[in-house]
Amino acid sequence: MASRKFISAVALTVVPVASLAMTLPAEAASRWMYKSSGESASAEWVEYGELAGVGGNVHVGYLEAETSSDGGEVWGKVIDYQCDEGETPGGGGHGEHIAEYDDEEPEPEPECDVMSYRWMEGGDVTFEVDKKLNTARLTGTLWVDNHGSAATPPVDMTWTGTGDLSESIWYEKYSEGGSTYTYKYESTSREALVNGRIGAMGFTDDADDESWGSIQRTKMFERGSSR
Image 1 (tube, rainbow, N blue to C red):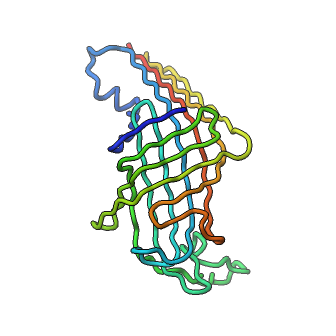
Image 2: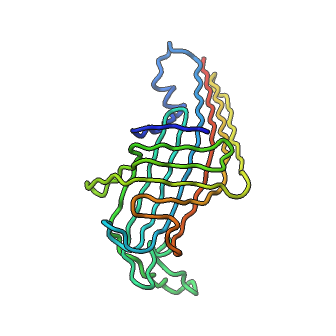
Image 3: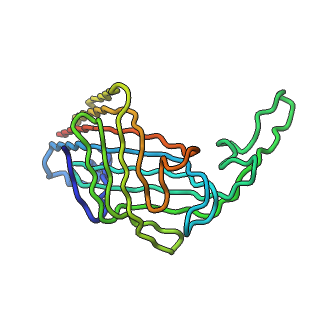
């Protein structure tokens, strides 16, 4: 069981090779290597209905939690909409209907009014992922900013893996002008069902709720040299 408790978010930053070449002095070591690994889980959802203390009647959100050899991070956002009957958040992604003929003007699709954007970060949280990517869980307290108005709702989210594992590998290697560079990225993931809640917002407490997610493990390796 991989477990990491963190209080402040630590973002993983990968410095491009070109930047390293510019910032390292000529007399510095001619070889460098970087490795990292970690687990993450992401969730997207649509919550219908009014929530205590929050404007709007449709709430669309995204959250990602990760723990890695470089630290941990939780971040996400929620957009709160006020929708009348027949309206959809974002107008189906493009805000317009497709014209039946090429020479027709597309008809505007009725869109909901945006009430607020809320940004989420990890506060005092614990994030766990099992070794086989069967389950993941995020518990604790998030920090939510609504344009200067802060809140600290409790969070208890679970991901339950479904289906087969999906694996992908990206490998790159080149040599030029006395410099060499090697990069390898491995990813193993699976889709997941999302359950639990953030504050008053539950993911499966209403029949019309929608949510989906994934669990992932990654490994990254970089190596470079120059002469």
